[in-house]
Image 1 (tube, rainbow, N blue to C red):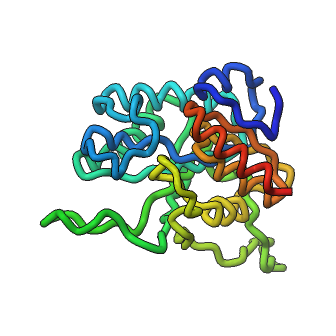
Image 2 (cartoon, helix red, strand yellow):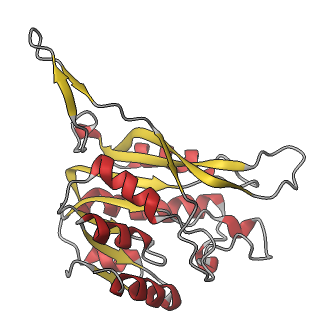
Image 3 (cartoon, rainbow, N blue to C red):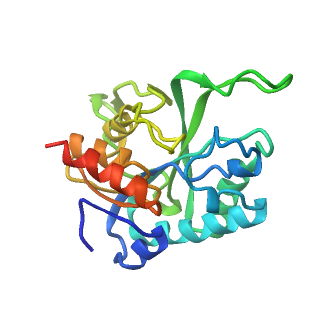
Length: 250
């Protein structure tokens, strides 16, 4: 298993070649299953062949991946899973996270609100709000719910009780929507977001995996912040764009 490499293959194939407890964590944004909603490709996130599933099939597909995440992520590791809802089935992310809790040894430890610089979609609905915030679900092994790794710094210690107090961290992270790369991938997030997540959860030298690498945004931020990375990307086009971006970063 080579690190600092993106594999042009399905993530299950990549994870099949990973030993147990290899990763310090994941930072990823999976398909949102939005192709069940529209055909004009405005929200096509580049995974059209696997992004128009029924609710049942979508959850089954993601659960197979989560069961592998459970195996390859270290006991004290962290999974940062950015997934938003779409108009036709807003409850889908919550159903998925619930099933992950029920069917794996992973559970929800926290929720981060990713506040974007601009909101989407355009105001064409009489009932739905324009979304400026997406959720990043922080998933950990159940046995490590209160002792998984973070970068939180101690600000002071009570000398009488030994109680530690930490610097102020909030669950609102403001960052650009994306890196402004023009391509068919319409739902990429930004290296700014990934960098801010790394600052909270991953020390230098950590090994982070992105099973939906896209145009290598996670890998790019890892390289900039002194972390190691592995990625998986089905699309040969996005795979090439991502590698081109990585080559430019010394």
